[in-house]
Length: 298
Length: 280
Image (cartoon, each protein chain N blue to C red):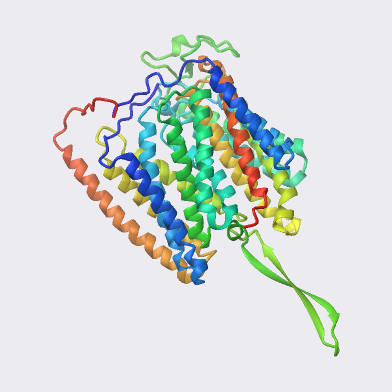
């Protein structure tokens, strides 16, 4: 019992889309490193832009995978993408400046193993399965890394787990001249951080919803690639809006407001464009026609 | 592009080559964990937990969209969503029990009871909706007689449907499924928590009490990730709908157990990597 899912041929080839997606996502995440270089956190929002690029690419990957009728619904693909992605992302952040690259490599390896398990042990026998799960794991990991970088201003493990520092002063021995000295130790505080406070779980689920929703909402005989991808961008900005609100807890007010304004403007623009595209596609069906059968494998 | 996945799931058999490669991946993951200087006991716990999740998901009666229209038995949503609901409810229960008692057995059983309870409530309310709101009796389409109560179904089954509602055997399967998945999820969480608890203070050079929230959050997030990976792999094995332990699709369960064990082993190895001091 599988639900028939039909996907449009697609105007932009999937591989081109994948290259754009991965490059923009990596560049976006790396641009947040400007925070470290310049000492201000206003560049954090680039992480969100990178995450949206990853989601944009992932929506097209889901379209390719789910055209094969998995029988489990489109959302399951988003869930496995983020399940694998979160493992790769947290392990990847340990590698300092190389974190985004290591995250991509780790996610690709995990995706390949899971894809092999699905295809050869569970006998799914779907030709695009391994490649799709590799891509989806990378998308999940990059989306989480991008949003985490936007939220905290850094993509490195210590920045994600240390919420703040408290100073502890203990009286030390009296120095010469009768002056009391104090020994000051810096104690990192973990509960108020992105991972320590489990705020990463929110990013996990808003990211997974943003990944699974576009194709799930747009699938059908009238599906068109530009509308699906515009919805991916729209939902991506909506998630970015939530991340921007969350970032008030982690970065300074000014930087968080910049992120909020970018997300809001992006969302308004993409929402308007998406509605326009929806009206265009709806108009094309004004005189209802029989469902178009697209022949061939694609 | 039209749907091509007619024969997507290749029957009920086991693919020998794929399984052999999978077991090699599993052993390599264990060996790599050992080579990095970690104890392999937690990884074994994670593998067992993953296999339990893959096994338990097959008990849960999943109806999908047809069930929402009263045309197939089961709960009207997808496998991944149901499994995540049951497993996460169990995981929260187990995590709380571990926090409160610190006892391994109580925590694992607490997680199992949490998952089972969640599924029992879901099944009860689903059946109430089916019977009193949709006005359909419970009838299985796969068997003529309920294996537990002995109720007969054919007279109640509407023509043109695969059965409808939630017969007792499916209800029973749901509770057992929730119990087993909750147990597996909690096992993974506790194993990870113990590892992080022991190793994070050294690697972060921090006080064990201060690191506590970080260890809990990391173990929790990883457990959710593991859980979703295993649940979706089991869902792929089921391909759509299953009525419960009496469904012929239940025979596919060994594949899912092996698959989930392999995936858990590898993901478990990766989750240990955060304890490696990279010096960055």
